[in-house]
Image (tube, rainbow, N blue to C red; front, side, top):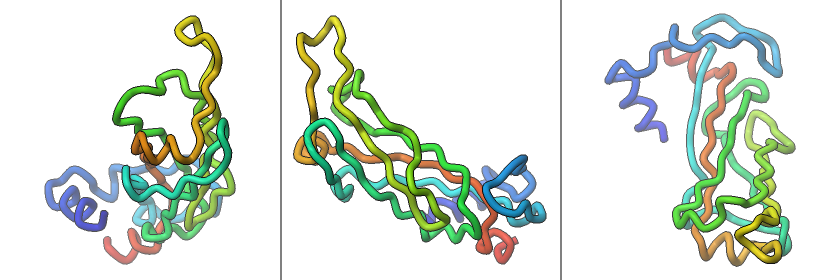
Length: 146
């Protein structure tokens, strides 16, 4: 991930002045501290837990070096596209500067299915689900880098 960030900086895609934090969960800091970090849990690396109908995973973002809890956006990556009507709990839970949890719930009942499906951890692994995320906040790494 560090290589991706360094490459994007070298190509001019990310500059310290391109990010403005309007509101954060912690203390607003000077502009060089504003930082965005992106990643994925990986299709074969995500550790799914839970029961049929409610699966969750912890996402480690500690490598970003956030000083406070960042603003986080997370989405489910479903490579097979089989669960378009999955009730995705994209609410970020238990967020800290080092990680967060995300919960996925069973399928919504639709005209396309006669009964709701309740995927569990085994199905999440089988279908290679992962979580893609983007976090923005104040980072000691950003201040030191610039």
